[in-house]
Length: 362
Image (cartoon, rainbow, N blue to C red; front, side, top):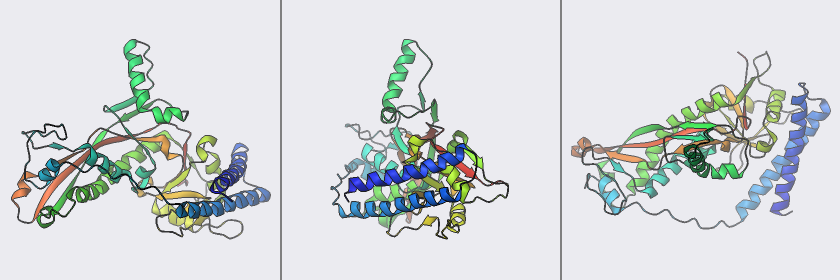
Protein backbone atom coordinates (compact mmCIF):
# COMPACT_ATOMS: atom_id res chain seq x y z
CA UNK A 1 0.00 0.00 0.00
CA UNK A 2 1.41 3.40 -0.97
CA UNK A 3 1.75 6.29 1.46
CA UNK A 4 -1.02 8.12 -0.39
CA UNK A 5 -3.36 5.12 -0.08
CA UNK A 6 -2.60 4.72 3.63
CA UNK A 7 -3.43 8.37 4.26
CA UNK A 8 -6.67 8.07 2.30
CA UNK A 9 -7.69 4.94 4.24
CA UNK A 10 -6.84 6.68 7.52
CA UNK A 11 -9.06 9.64 6.61
CA UNK A 12 -11.89 7.27 5.68
CA UNK A 13 -11.64 5.42 9.01
CA UNK A 14 -11.60 8.74 10.91
CA UNK A 15 -14.72 9.83 9.05
CA UNK A 16 -16.51 6.60 10.03
CA UNK A 17 -15.65 7.20 13.69
CA UNK A 18 -16.68 10.85 13.39
CA UNK A 19 -20.05 9.84 11.89
CA UNK A 20 -20.80 7.59 14.88
CA UNK A 21 -19.75 10.28 17.38
CA UNK A 22 -21.79 12.97 15.61
CA UNK A 23 -24.93 10.80 15.55
CA UNK A 24 -24.65 10.08 19.27
CA UNK A 25 -24.18 13.76 20.10
CA UNK A 26 -27.02 14.90 17.83
CA UNK A 27 -29.44 12.43 19.45
CA UNK A 28 -28.13 13.20 22.98
CA UNK A 29 -27.76 9.59 24.01
CA UNK A 30 -25.13 6.97 24.82
CA UNK A 31 -23.73 4.67 22.16
CA UNK A 32 -25.35 1.32 21.52
CA UNK A 33 -23.27 -1.86 21.67
CA UNK A 34 -23.11 -1.94 17.88
CA UNK A 35 -21.98 1.67 17.73
CA UNK A 36 -19.29 1.05 20.33
CA UNK A 37 -17.95 -1.79 18.19
CA UNK A 38 -18.08 0.33 15.03
CA UNK A 39 -16.27 3.19 16.73
CA UNK A 40 -13.60 0.95 18.31
CA UNK A 41 -12.92 -0.86 15.03
CA UNK A 42 -12.59 2.40 13.12
CA UNK A 43 -10.21 3.92 15.68
CA UNK A 44 -8.15 0.71 15.83
CA UNK A 45 -7.75 0.93 12.05
CA UNK A 46 -6.75 4.60 12.37
CA UNK A 47 -4.08 3.72 14.93
CA UNK A 48 -2.67 0.90 12.79
CA UNK A 49 -2.53 3.11 9.69
CA UNK A 50 -1.02 5.95 11.68
CA UNK A 51 1.90 3.75 12.71
CA UNK A 52 2.33 2.52 9.13
CA UNK A 53 2.35 6.09 7.83
CA UNK A 54 4.90 7.16 10.45
CA UNK A 55 7.15 4.22 9.54
CA UNK A 56 6.86 5.06 5.82
CA UNK A 57 7.64 8.72 6.44
CA UNK A 58 10.67 7.85 8.57
CA UNK A 59 11.97 5.66 5.76
CA UNK A 60 11.70 8.53 3.29
CA UNK A 61 14.86 10.69 3.18
CA UNK A 62 14.08 14.22 4.24
CA UNK A 63 15.46 17.25 2.47
CA UNK A 64 18.40 19.06 4.01
CA UNK A 65 17.10 22.07 5.94
CA UNK A 66 18.44 25.48 5.04
CA UNK A 67 20.56 26.77 7.92
CA UNK A 68 19.45 30.01 9.51
CA UNK A 69 21.53 33.08 8.74
CA UNK A 70 24.02 33.67 11.55
CA UNK A 71 23.49 36.63 13.82
CA UNK A 72 25.73 39.61 13.13
CA UNK A 73 29.26 39.80 14.50
CA UNK A 74 28.20 43.07 16.09
CA UNK A 75 25.45 41.29 18.01
CA UNK A 76 27.84 38.63 19.27
CA UNK A 77 30.24 41.33 20.43
CA UNK A 78 27.33 43.01 22.20
CA UNK A 79 26.37 39.82 24.04
CA UNK A 80 29.95 39.41 25.26
CA UNK A 81 29.99 42.95 26.59
CA UNK A 82 32.59 44.17 24.10
CA UNK A 83 30.27 46.97 22.97
CA UNK A 84 26.87 48.00 24.19
CA UNK A 85 25.65 51.16 22.53
CA UNK A 86 26.81 51.73 18.98
CA UNK A 87 24.55 52.32 16.03
CA UNK A 88 24.50 49.98 13.05
CA UNK A 89 24.98 51.32 9.54
CA UNK A 90 23.24 48.36 7.91
CA UNK A 91 20.14 48.34 10.11
CA UNK A 92 21.01 44.97 11.62
CA UNK A 93 20.62 46.40 15.09
CA UNK A 94 19.10 49.39 16.79
CA UNK A 95 20.94 50.31 19.95
CA UNK A 96 20.00 53.22 22.20
CA UNK A 97 22.75 55.04 24.08
CA UNK A 98 20.34 55.84 26.92
CA UNK A 99 19.71 52.26 28.02
CA UNK A 100 21.97 50.01 25.97
CA UNK A 101 18.96 48.15 24.57
CA UNK A 102 19.71 46.02 21.56
CA UNK A 103 17.05 44.99 19.03
CA UNK A 104 18.11 41.55 17.85
CA UNK A 105 18.96 40.79 14.22
CA UNK A 106 16.02 39.13 12.44
CA UNK A 107 17.78 35.75 12.25
CA UNK A 108 18.12 35.58 16.03
CA UNK A 109 14.59 36.90 16.63
CA UNK A 110 13.13 34.22 14.38
CA UNK A 111 15.23 31.51 16.02
CA UNK A 112 14.08 32.63 19.46
CA UNK A 113 10.41 32.58 18.48
CA UNK A 114 10.88 29.10 16.98
CA UNK A 115 12.38 27.97 20.29
CA UNK A 116 9.44 29.48 22.19
CA UNK A 117 6.79 27.64 20.17
CA UNK A 118 8.66 24.38 19.56
CA UNK A 119 7.70 21.54 21.93
CA UNK A 120 6.43 23.99 24.53
CA UNK A 121 3.00 22.59 25.31
CA UNK A 122 0.06 24.42 23.78
CA UNK A 123 2.27 26.94 21.95
CA UNK A 124 3.62 24.23 19.64
CA UNK A 125 0.05 23.59 18.38
CA UNK A 126 -0.85 27.20 17.60
CA UNK A 127 -0.48 28.98 14.28
CA UNK A 128 2.31 31.59 14.54
CA UNK A 129 1.92 34.87 12.70
CA UNK A 130 3.86 38.12 12.57
CA UNK A 131 1.83 41.29 12.97
CA UNK A 132 2.77 44.90 12.40
CA UNK A 133 1.03 46.45 15.40
CA UNK A 134 -0.09 45.62 18.94
CA UNK A 135 -3.55 44.50 17.83
CA UNK A 136 -4.85 42.31 15.02
CA UNK A 137 -8.51 43.05 14.28
CA UNK A 138 -10.26 41.54 11.25
CA UNK A 139 -12.67 42.28 9.70
CA UNK A 140 -13.76 45.79 10.64
CA UNK A 141 -17.24 47.17 10.09
CA UNK A 142 -15.93 50.48 8.72
CA UNK A 143 -16.86 51.03 5.05
CA UNK A 144 -14.87 54.24 4.72
CA UNK A 145 -11.66 54.36 2.71
CA UNK A 146 -9.62 54.14 5.91
CA UNK A 147 -11.61 51.14 7.13
CA UNK A 148 -11.23 49.29 3.84
CA UNK A 149 -7.51 49.98 3.78
CA UNK A 150 -7.22 48.53 7.30
CA UNK A 151 -9.12 45.41 6.22
CA UNK A 152 -6.81 44.91 3.24
CA UNK A 153 -3.74 45.18 5.47
CA UNK A 154 -5.11 42.78 8.07
CA UNK A 155 -6.31 40.38 5.38
CA UNK A 156 -2.73 40.03 4.17
CA UNK A 157 -1.62 39.14 7.68
CA UNK A 158 -4.42 36.56 7.85
CA UNK A 159 -3.86 35.37 4.29
CA UNK A 160 -2.89 31.79 5.07
CA UNK A 161 -5.96 31.39 7.27
CA UNK A 162 -8.29 33.12 4.84
CA UNK A 163 -7.20 30.80 2.02
CA UNK A 164 -8.37 27.80 4.07
CA UNK A 165 -11.81 29.42 4.22
CA UNK A 166 -12.22 28.85 7.93
CA UNK A 167 -15.42 30.10 9.53
CA UNK A 168 -13.57 32.54 11.75
CA UNK A 169 -15.21 35.28 13.74
CA UNK A 170 -13.89 38.73 14.56
CA UNK A 171 -10.58 38.40 16.33
CA UNK A 172 -8.62 40.81 18.48
CA UNK A 173 -5.15 39.95 19.68
CA UNK A 174 -3.69 42.18 22.37
CA UNK A 175 0.05 41.61 22.59
CA UNK A 176 1.90 41.35 25.89
CA UNK A 177 5.62 41.57 26.59
CA UNK A 178 7.19 38.53 28.23
CA UNK A 179 10.65 38.99 29.76
CA UNK A 180 13.01 36.41 31.24
CA UNK A 181 16.40 36.79 32.92
CA UNK A 182 19.17 34.36 32.03
CA UNK A 183 22.56 34.10 33.70
CA UNK A 184 25.60 32.87 31.75
CA UNK A 185 28.92 32.09 33.41
CA UNK A 186 31.74 34.36 32.24
CA UNK A 187 33.77 31.31 31.27
CA UNK A 188 31.04 30.31 28.84
CA UNK A 189 30.44 33.91 27.72
CA UNK A 190 34.10 34.43 26.78
CA UNK A 191 34.53 31.10 24.98
CA UNK A 192 34.50 32.02 21.27
CA UNK A 193 33.81 28.40 20.36
CA UNK A 194 30.44 28.59 22.13
CA UNK A 195 27.29 29.70 20.29
CA UNK A 196 26.18 32.20 22.92
CA UNK A 197 23.02 33.17 21.01
CA UNK A 198 21.86 29.56 21.05
CA UNK A 199 22.40 29.25 24.81
CA UNK A 200 20.49 32.45 25.53
CA UNK A 201 17.58 31.57 23.23
CA UNK A 202 17.27 28.07 24.68
CA UNK A 203 17.27 29.26 28.30
CA UNK A 204 15.06 32.31 27.74
CA UNK A 205 12.52 30.62 25.48
CA UNK A 206 11.44 28.09 28.11
CA UNK A 207 10.51 30.79 30.62
CA UNK A 208 8.77 32.95 28.02
CA UNK A 209 6.83 29.94 26.76
CA UNK A 210 5.56 29.05 30.25
CA UNK A 211 4.16 32.54 30.75
CA UNK A 212 2.73 32.85 27.23
CA UNK A 213 1.08 29.44 27.54
CA UNK A 214 -0.95 30.61 30.54
CA UNK A 215 -2.32 33.52 28.51
CA UNK A 216 -3.02 31.25 25.55
CA UNK A 217 -5.22 28.99 27.70
CA UNK A 218 -7.00 32.02 29.13
CA UNK A 219 -7.95 33.01 25.58
CA UNK A 220 -8.92 29.46 24.58
CA UNK A 221 -11.04 28.89 27.69
CA UNK A 222 -12.93 32.12 27.03
CA UNK A 223 -13.42 31.41 23.33
CA UNK A 224 -14.47 27.75 23.06
CA UNK A 225 -17.32 25.60 24.35
CA UNK A 226 -16.64 23.56 27.50
CA UNK A 227 -19.19 20.92 28.46
CA UNK A 228 -19.53 19.12 31.81
CA UNK A 229 -19.46 15.34 32.05
CA UNK A 230 -21.97 13.20 33.98
CA UNK A 231 -23.13 14.17 37.46
CA UNK A 232 -20.82 11.51 38.93
CA UNK A 233 -17.98 13.97 38.39
CA UNK A 234 -15.99 11.37 36.43
CA UNK A 235 -15.20 11.57 32.72
CA UNK A 236 -15.93 8.25 31.03
CA UNK A 237 -15.62 6.64 27.60
CA UNK A 238 -18.90 8.05 26.27
CA UNK A 239 -17.96 11.57 27.40
CA UNK A 240 -14.76 11.40 25.38
CA UNK A 241 -16.56 10.09 22.29
CA UNK A 242 -19.22 12.81 22.59
CA UNK A 243 -16.47 15.39 22.79
CA UNK A 244 -15.06 14.19 19.46
CA UNK A 245 -18.45 14.73 17.87
CA UNK A 246 -18.63 18.25 19.28
CA UNK A 247 -15.90 19.56 16.98
CA UNK A 248 -17.06 21.01 13.67
CA UNK A 249 -16.40 18.38 10.97
CA UNK A 250 -13.98 20.44 8.87
CA UNK A 251 -11.66 20.81 11.87
CA UNK A 252 -11.80 17.17 12.95
CA UNK A 253 -9.04 15.82 10.68
CA UNK A 254 -6.40 18.13 12.18
CA UNK A 255 -7.71 17.68 15.73
CA UNK A 256 -5.42 16.97 18.70
CA UNK A 257 -5.88 16.67 22.43
CA UNK A 258 -4.35 18.98 25.02
CA UNK A 259 -4.61 18.26 28.74
CA UNK A 260 -2.72 18.48 32.02
CA UNK A 261 -0.55 15.63 33.25
CA UNK A 262 -3.09 14.84 35.99
CA UNK A 263 -5.89 14.44 33.41
CA UNK A 264 -3.59 12.40 31.19
CA UNK A 265 -2.97 9.95 34.06
CA UNK A 266 -6.74 9.64 34.58
CA UNK A 267 -7.31 8.85 30.89
CA UNK A 268 -4.36 6.44 30.92
CA UNK A 269 -6.34 4.19 33.31
CA UNK A 270 -9.37 3.90 30.99
CA UNK A 271 -10.11 0.91 28.72
CA UNK A 272 -12.57 0.32 25.86
CA UNK A 273 -15.24 -2.39 25.61
CA UNK A 274 -12.57 -4.94 24.67
CA UNK A 275 -10.48 -4.08 27.75
CA UNK A 276 -7.85 -2.34 25.64
CA UNK A 277 -6.28 0.90 26.96
CA UNK A 278 -7.74 3.98 25.30
CA UNK A 279 -4.34 5.69 25.25
CA UNK A 280 -1.69 4.38 22.89
CA UNK A 281 1.80 5.13 24.16
CA UNK A 282 4.51 6.14 21.64
CA UNK A 283 6.91 3.50 20.37
CA UNK A 284 9.46 5.95 18.97
CA UNK A 285 11.27 8.82 20.67
CA UNK A 286 9.71 12.15 19.82
CA UNK A 287 6.24 10.74 19.08
CA UNK A 288 3.20 11.70 21.13
CA UNK A 289 0.82 9.39 22.99
CA UNK A 290 -2.56 9.24 21.28
CA UNK A 291 -6.23 8.88 22.19
CA UNK A 292 -8.62 7.54 19.52
CA UNK A 293 -5.73 8.00 17.07
CA UNK A 294 -5.36 11.69 17.92
CA UNK A 295 -2.12 13.08 19.39
CA UNK A 296 -2.00 14.24 23.02
CA UNK A 297 -0.04 17.31 24.10
CA UNK A 298 0.48 17.60 27.85
CA UNK A 299 0.41 21.13 29.26
CA UNK A 300 -0.44 21.76 32.91
CA UNK A 301 -1.87 25.17 32.01
CA UNK A 302 -4.91 23.27 30.71
CA UNK A 303 -6.01 22.83 34.32
CA UNK A 304 -8.96 20.47 34.84
CA UNK A 305 -10.29 20.69 31.26
CA UNK A 306 -9.54 18.26 28.44
CA UNK A 307 -9.37 20.11 25.10
CA UNK A 308 -9.77 18.59 21.63
CA UNK A 309 -9.75 20.30 18.26
CA UNK A 310 -7.76 22.09 15.59
CA UNK A 311 -5.45 24.33 17.59
CA UNK A 312 -4.03 25.89 14.43
CA UNK A 313 -7.15 28.07 14.49
CA UNK A 314 -5.67 29.78 17.55
CA UNK A 315 -3.21 32.44 16.36
CA UNK A 316 -0.03 33.21 18.27
CA UNK A 317 0.84 36.67 16.97
CA UNK A 318 4.37 38.01 17.32
CA UNK A 319 5.72 41.53 16.90
CA UNK A 320 8.58 41.91 14.46
CA UNK A 321 11.48 41.75 16.88
CA UNK A 322 12.53 40.38 20.21
CA UNK A 323 15.14 42.18 22.25
CA UNK A 324 18.01 41.23 24.54
CA UNK A 325 19.45 43.56 27.15
CA UNK A 326 22.81 42.97 28.82
CA UNK A 327 22.80 43.96 32.48
CA UNK A 328 25.80 46.30 32.46
CA UNK A 329 26.22 45.97 36.24
CA UNK A 330 26.74 42.23 35.91
CA UNK A 331 29.66 42.83 33.51
CA UNK A 332 31.79 43.87 36.47
CA UNK A 333 31.18 40.49 38.10
CA UNK A 334 33.93 37.90 37.97
CA UNK A 335 31.40 35.05 37.89
CA UNK A 336 28.51 35.58 35.47
CA UNK A 337 26.71 37.95 33.13
CA UNK A 338 22.96 38.56 33.27
CA UNK A 339 20.75 38.99 30.18
CA UNK A 340 17.09 40.00 29.92
CA UNK A 341 15.34 38.63 26.83
CA UNK A 342 11.87 39.84 25.92
CA UNK A 343 9.33 38.88 23.28
CA UNK A 344 6.07 40.58 22.42
CA UNK A 345 3.23 38.24 21.50
CA UNK A 346 -0.33 37.21 22.26
CA UNK A 347 -2.99 34.63 21.25
CA UNK A 348 -6.45 34.98 19.74
CA UNK A 349 -9.27 32.56 18.83
CA UNK A 350 -10.25 32.51 15.16
CA UNK A 351 -12.97 29.88 15.27
CA UNK A 352 -15.05 29.04 18.33
CA UNK A 353 -16.25 25.74 16.81
CA UNK A 354 -12.78 24.36 16.08
CA UNK A 355 -11.92 23.36 19.66
CA UNK A 356 -14.12 21.94 22.42
CA UNK A 357 -13.43 21.29 26.09
CA UNK A 358 -14.57 18.59 28.48
CA UNK A 359 -14.67 19.06 32.23
CA UNK A 360 -15.89 16.85 35.06
CA UNK A 361 -18.60 18.29 37.28
CA UNK A 362 -17.45 19.15 40.78
